[in-house]
Image 1: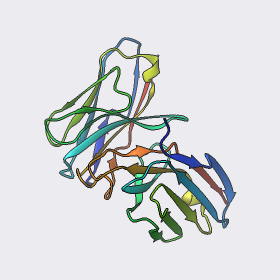
Image 2: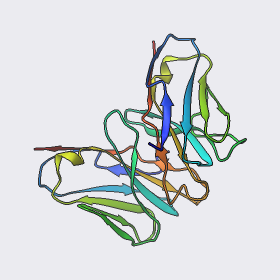
Image 3: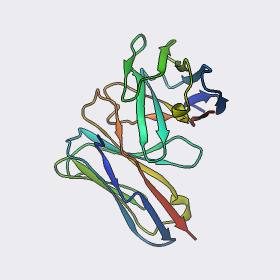
Image 4: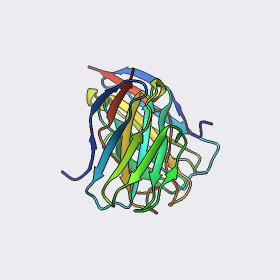
Length: 115
Length: 111
């Protein structure tokens, strides 16, 4: 099925460890996004990539880095995990100029716990 | 700063009841979207509204965009347990901008 695939689905890290969350889409979308979702806070944008070769900070970028590997793949890296980064992470994709019309397609999320 | 305020935050009703969820902002949006999110899954787009005053219907769900394009509502008629989920509104300030999400309304429909 066409869509956005995220790996892993679950992960437990110790404080200070690093990891990379992977995201791939097969809809030929140009734009990709990383959000985190926390209780009472809603979805907050971490980083986004409007097109291959570009990345920009969102609302909460501190502690994260991203790489737009190619048109299909957009990864999120935590260099030194902190308990405050315990969250559910969602990757999404869309067409530029239509993010306001055709919506985002989301992956099923990565549930990350930092202890 | 919360740009999109959703109300209520939680709603627990019986099957067959009607309900309305609201999404309000002081900002003007070029378009507004509604998503539904089920436990353990990502949000799924329900509808996009782009014209002030626009009304769209999706089976028992009716979506309205305010005349000034600052607010929206979602009305569900004769709610069913399958409607249970987190309903999120999201707005775009232009066709090129990223979406800003509200915090959501958690709906529980009991049989």
